[in-house]
Every structure is written in C-alpha cells, then in structure tokens.
Length: 261
Ligand code: COA
Image: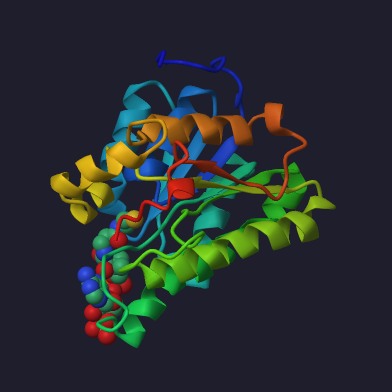
C-alpha cells in the first residue's frame, strides 16, 4: 500500500475532535487527519496519554490540541468540546474512538464490569455526540463512530463489548436520521482484528492469531492504516452522500464467523 492514498488537502482547514485519540486506531486516525490538512483535538482520560501523539502531530508540522476528559462524564466532555471550539474556532468532525475492552466470560463478569464498558463505549459516544451537536450543526459537520463486528454473530468472552458496540451502531443509525436534516452526517467504521494495536496484542495470543489469519478471506490481519484510510474517505467530501452507514473494514472476516474469543 502506498504511503499516501489521498490528496494531502482533503481535510484542509477542518477541525477534528477525536476521543481516544492518543493511541491505537483512533490515534492513527487523528494523525492521518492532521496529515491531510485537519486541525486536530485529541482527548483521553489522562492528559499524559495524549502527550506522545500531540508531539508526533506537531513534529510533523500539524496542529494538535490535547484536552483530558472521561467520556463517561458529560460535563467533562462538554468542557472539552467548548475548549476545542474556543481553541480552533469550530468543530467539523467528531470521531468517537474511546473504548474499554478486556476478555471475560459472561459467567465471570460482574455487573459493574459490564456496565463500565457500556458506559465508556455507548454512553460515552452519546455524550460526545450530544455535547458536540451545536458545533456540528453550525459547521454542517459529521460524526464517525468506531464500532466492531463482535455483535454481528456471537463472540464469547466479549458480551460487554458486543452489547456496547451494538448500542453504538444504534446511535449511528438514529442520529444519521435525526441530525441528517441539520446537515450532519453520522457514520461508523467496524474494524476487524487490527494487528498493530495494544489491545490486539493484549487480547490475542500469537497461536490464536495464526489460526484466525488462515480464516480471514483476505489472508491477513488489518492494520491501523486500513482504518485510517476508511476514516479519511468517510470524513471527506467524497462521502458527502453517505449517511447512517457502518463500514466494515475486516477483510471479510466476520462473514467467516471467526471469533476472537
Ligand atoms: N476482567 C473482568 N472484569 C474486569 C476486567 C477484566 N480484565 N477489567 C475490569 N473489570 C471490571 C472490574 O472488576 C470492575 O468491576 P467490579 O467493581 O465489579 O470488580 C469494573 O470492570 C470496572 O473496572 P475498573 O478498572 O474500576 O474501571 P475503570 O473505569 O478504571 O477502567 C477499563 C475500565 C475497561 C478501561 C479497564 O478495565 C482497562 O483499563 N482496560 C484496558 C484498557 C482498554 O480497555 N483499552 C481500550 C482497548 S480497545
């Protein structure tokens, strides 16, 4: 895959607010958006988790505003959105990437464990969308929710994340209808297994990885760059008539029913 698929100015002057933007898939999306002309705000629970990405974006000549907020806390989210709008003057793109995950069998999972992941992924996504609505309405902007394919079939050890991401997909569809009339597009991406993330290294032992790879129709795990490219496309004007879609980027993996659990 070439380094750059898209023209470098496809997001010129856009302001992107990216939750979970310090690391992993959403960190990659934040950096890719900056490389394609966007001014980027990144947020995470702890400001120190944002420093490396802020430095990387700025060292490459981009502009990055780092602001701490726990997406479960609506007031903290509202504050982060307000500070971003003050800093950059507007918000055009919101990426909901903050997520919690761990492997746990349903009969071992506590109610609080289930609720914690739903709070981060589902309620957190709603909180950010809701807090950003006025800014997005003004800019006729858009939302991109990072989902998963876990809930399309059934993924053992992942009942909490599956339920949470099913909720995220419902938010994507619902808001695309309710907010489309305000000119706000709402879409999602459902990544399959992405090999170069901390989460995947933690969740998947090498032996299982090999077995799963054999069952992925395209014969390889995804990479963060695959998700970056999908995000750039969906957030660019090339996708200006795409609304309410969750784009699966998994090499065809879920259709084979290969579970990570
Ligand atoms: N297995 C089972 N239950 C777990 C768990 C695990 N590995 N990790 C957390 N939980 C449960 C806790 O036991 C607790 O429930 P309890 O009070 O009934 O014991 C509940 O989840 C909340 O855990 P806590 O650590 O207090 O919550 P937190 O808000 O500080 O963090 C996570 C929640 C999910 C973010 C945390 O577990 C975590 O750091 N995970 C790894 C990082 C991550 O998820 N990154 C995203 C990759 S996609």
